[in-house]
Length: 206
Ligand SMILES: Cc1cc2nc3c(=O)[nH]c(=O)nc-3n(C[C@H](O)[C@H](O)[C@H](O)COP(=O)(O)O)c2cc1C
Picture (cartoon, rainbow, N blue to C red):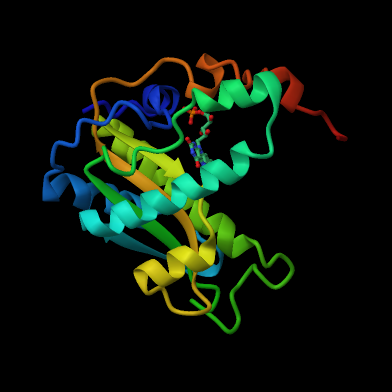
């Protein structure tokens, strides 16, 4: 296990093609979920829930839906960009060991969520922080995580019986892997390159 925070941050990758499918020990999964649950949240609302999806039939059904959405996106592309996208793997739903769906409950901690009165999205930001904690903890545990967003929320709500009003935020594939790539997949496939930090830092005004 690697626990140096900067090392973990820089080793973390979005994993799609390197999952082995080997099982995850219960204690390891518990440590990762405990890390996710330790995230900061607006008004201490902790508006997240985690649905652990091990059922292969459910994952297969989700994967079919992802393929449909992949095709829908591919249909918007032409020429060299379409060719490039065709070579990119966008999920490891079937190859990973388990999936974790992270949801957002806007009612949690209400009606007066301290700090959210002016920025409704602060609840959603909190869920994303739990996801990042999960991602970094998994990386420290030598496991891979892949975020899949090629889905429609109503489909996923129906598939997992997520109550009305609760929003699925992420489908995360999780599991042991052969290796972590040093460079993001999208960069390796020539889709995009990373922006230098200098271009993102502003001083005093935008
Ligand atoms: C909100 C969000 C949604 C994403 N959805 C997908 C996805 O559907 N499929 C995929 O292959 N990667 C997805 N990714 C991963 C990004 O492509 C990846 O984070 C980015 O290319 C940088 O690579 P790295 O995470 O390995 O540093 C998603 C990432 C985020 C944060």
